[in-house]
Length: 78
Image (cartoon, rainbow, N blue to C red):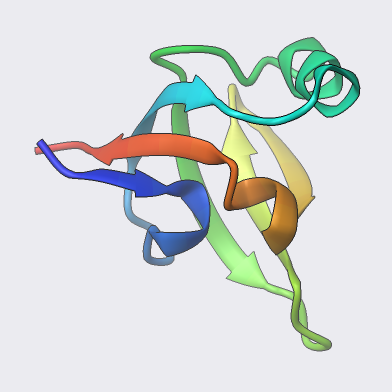
């Protein structure tokens, strides 16, 4: 089992969320958009300016900063 941050997952690669390791304000926002343990997340594309990525989370497309994605631990699907 590979433990990585969400930032390290390749485009179109599925991953399961293991843990959100960030402060309570950002964690609450991530939980509100449906990003919780065992949620499947798929990176879709990077922004042109960099530093932001779009992810498919529960049939929605959500943009996250790379700095926030680095605090979300995931494992790749098999």
